[in-house]
Amino acid sequence: MAEKPHLLYITRKEHFNAAHKLYNPNWTEEENDAVFGKCANKNWHGHNFNLYVTVKGHPNPDTGFVIDLKILKRIIGDKVIEKLDHRNLNEDVDFMQGKMASIENLAVEIWKQIEPELHNCHLHCIKLYETESNYVEYYG
Ligand code: NI
Image 1: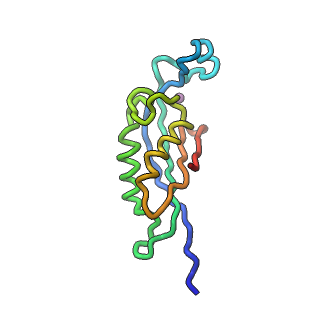
Image 2: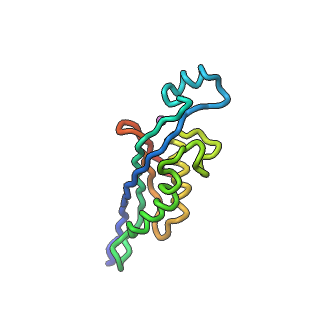
């Protein structure tokens, strides 16, 4: 009897630095300060972001790979890191235009950038750390 195909999850970690502010233009300055605190600072602030991209699939019998990590690195580099690293998330990033620059929204938009590029495997999770203590996970 043939062995059941194994489902595996493989993760690539990447890093980028970016600036943002959390500021709702429909609110007063007092309301923004009350909700966003230091993150509403008009003159921006930065974070060292860590991004974990997890892909799931069955290993290819010829390579043993769910995905060639060189290819995953290139996809994340071209579609995400190149657009975010050393940028202002509110102003410089095409896929964040008109959105609040929270890690929640950023994780969803990163998913949309990467998912269409994957073949023979599926995006499982985008995990995005804004600080050592704060991170978000998105499963599509
Ligand atoms: Ni922040």
